[in-house]
Length: 322
Image (cartoon, rainbow, N blue to C red):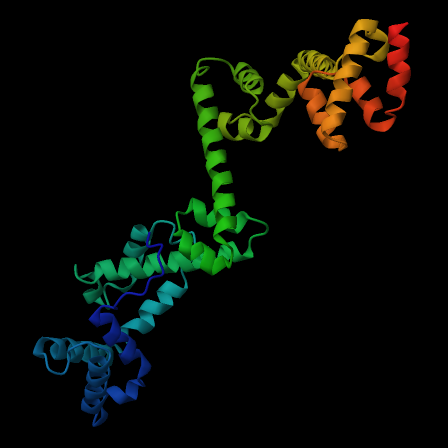
C-alpha cells in the first residue's frame, strides 16, 4: 500500500475532474458551457498543466465536461461517494477494493478502467486505507495505535507526524513489536519439533521452554481446557522447580555474602578486619567501602559492622586475638 504522505503532482484527468466537481451542473450547459471550459483550462494552466495550448488536453477536458453533462453529475460525485463509504475491512486489499469500485462505476464511467487511470485509482484507494488506519490508530488506547501502524508497515515519518509522537517513542514500540514477532517465530519453531505429539505434549513442551500461556493458546491453537489440564499435571514439577530455584538463589546469596560472624575462624576474622581498615583508609563513603569490600571477598556481616558501628571492629579484633 502507499504509506507515504509526500505530496505528488496529481494526474491531469483527476485535476480536471476536481474542477468540474466544483462547478454547478448548470454551468456546464447553454451559454455557460464554453465559459466554464475556458475557466477550467485557465485554472489548470495556472496550476502548471499545459491545457489551453495543447489540443489533446483540451479534447480530454471537453470530453470530461461533456460526459458530466450527459450523466447529469461529475465523475467525482460518484467516485467520492463510493470511496467515502469504504470501511477499513473493504480496503484491506487495495487491489480488490479497486476492482470493487470499478465494478460499481465502470458501466457509467468506463474511462476509469483505462490502463492509464487504474494506477491513479489504486493510489487513491491506498491513501483511503492509510487515512482509515490513522483514524483507527488515534482511537486506540496506550500504544496499540502505534503498533497497528507498524504492523501495517506505514512509513515511520507518517506515524510520528500523524500520531504526534517522538521518534524515540516509535523506536521503543517498534523494538517491542520486533521482540514479540521474534518470540512468535521461536514458538513456531518449537512446535515444529513436536509436530507429531499430542496437544498435551505440545503444551508441556512449550511451558518447559518458558512460552507464555497466551502465545500457547494463540499459536498452538489449543483451548483453555488443555492448558489447565497440563498445568495441573505439571503443578508438582513446577513447585519443585521453584523450590530448587529458591534454594539456589539463597545459596548464591549466602555465598556472595560470605560466612556469618560465628562461622569465622579467629585468623580469618583478624585478616578481614585488617583488610577493612586498609580499605577505609582510602574512603569513608559507605557505597565505595562496600564495593571495595565486595571486590576483596570480605564477608557482608563484617562490612555491615564496619559502615554502621566501626568502633565494634576493635572489639571483634581483640576477641579474635585472644
